[in-house]
Image 1 (cartoon, rainbow, N blue to C red):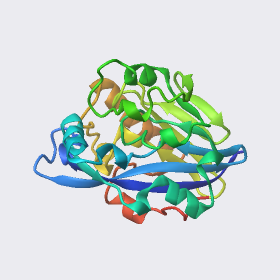
Image 2 (cartoon, rainbow, N blue to C red):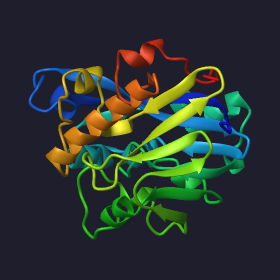
Image 3 (tube, rainbow, N blue to C red):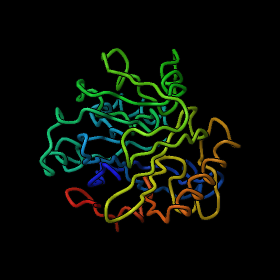
Image 4 (cartoon, one colour):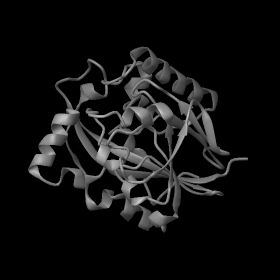
Length: 258
């Protein structure tokens, strides 16, 4: 029996980026407004947050904006007040202090922004991702200020694992060295596949198009195929993390999937 009662999709803002960041060698002339998401699970064992959004304070001034653009190759994200995680939690009736477990798909800056507001939580991540994210001088899409020297309660895992009945984490190395995805079982909806950044857009899965950035192209393609196979095996609803079309038809918090 699953211990997961409800899944909330938190819309945490939008990243403005060249399409090629999501689809390798496709769409260089197009700029997309891609959602930044996080997922909150209501379980019999407490609230679990999957990923932690983007910290808009990281780009508060002109120098920070330019540094962010230089570091990621994206335009500055758009994060309104209604996109702030704390506001969405309040609408659900949850305080940050009630979240005792956080699972990170990986540690890019659009997945780690709210960690600093969750000092009481265990933070679960793949060991390979944690080690990579703590590499001295690391650039790219990582924001060390989100997670370094904060006294976070790290819980390092390796490979596939189950946090609670109904929440299975799947190793999907490729986009980053320790990327992981989730399979969630709900009482009425059934299985939900959460690929995170295995593929940003539907076409990543439909046409097996690699993400724009990968640490290992062979592993990245294998991850796409693994998520497709798991979704088919479990007849799962797939919720895409960054797809600007799919997000418009999802049930967004405070609505939920149950």
